[in-house]
Amino acid sequence: MTAPLDRPIPRPGVLDIAPYVPGKSKATGGGKLYKLSSNETPLGASPKAIAAYQAQAGALEFYPDGSATALREAIGRLYGLAPERLICGAGSDEILNLIAHAYIGPGDEAIYSEHGFLVYPIAVTGAGGTPIAVKEKNLTADVDALLAAVTERTRVLFLANPNNPTGTYLPFDEVKRLHAGLPKRVLLVLDAAYAEYVRRNDYESGIELVSTSENVIMARTFSKIYGLAGLRLGWAYGPAAVIDAMNRIRGPFNVSAPAIAAGVAAIEDRDFTARAADHNEEWLPKVVGALEAIGLTVTPSVGNFVLIHFPDAAGKRAPDADAFLLDRGVVVRRMDAYGLPNALRMTIGSAEANEAAIAALTEFLR
Image 1 (tube, rainbow, N blue to C red):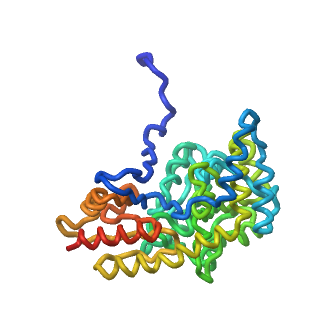
Image 2: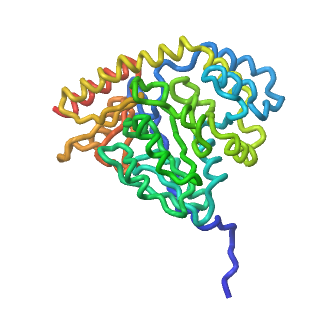
Image 3: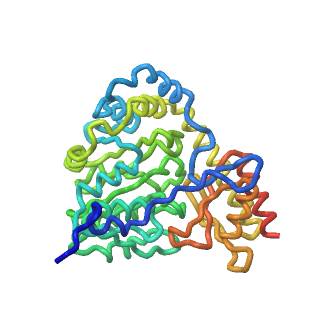
């Protein structure tokens, strides 16, 4: 006879999930802190978004609009999309989890590239499915390998484009080729969290493909270029049937009223967003050039961060560099959890933060 349990036990698979560990927020040394670990914008949030957020302080006793109507309409105006095909969530993390719980169950599989966003395997396993990591080519998603991994059990394919943490991307022609090779029963999730930063003519966030397909959904976030990471706000554009399924399991008030108000103001302040993109466009090549000039290898990035590779030499590896930077107030992101133990990811920060990180790494390599 089985012994009685002395406490509730989670269902099989839950305790096998490796918890998501966010980037560090503190350094070990004294002095000024330069937080470059979480891909946050150095410009902060739009003053108009902050004002809209603060204006909600006198009405916190009221529930928010459960459909986030004003925000969906604002997004629709900006991109020319039907609001009824939009869904909002507490960050794109919730969007990804809603997709997993709506389309994945025990015995199902979901595919993602090997250095893809860590939330994918967490969401898939949490829904009872099996995450399948697929090898990349030159730290970039490999369309042929992804298609070869599709089985009868595949229900979802997650593609971060651009990818975090590598900063690489697939041109739109390759994304279309990937979609064309998928069975119609497989949902292609285009995670375009960094789309606003991309300045490549062959890139497309996914709007066109969603508009012409029944098995593609695009996820976006307000946490990066809009500077609203602390509010947790994301959205997705998808086929009507997919949005309907997600709405059926979405919490009735999953986005707060202050977040809705700030999101509307942020997305309408196009001048502020343009300044944030211009800052990244200026500093991304500067940072890459400076890092390469001191002998480091940097994966080409189209996002607001860079993946830095370190020499395989005693005292000069990524963990050594991380400790050295922390002691000088520079906080970056270790990549061990992504299978890249000898690399660090660094956000493009303010001019002062970028220069402090470059100076510290120059000193480290001497």
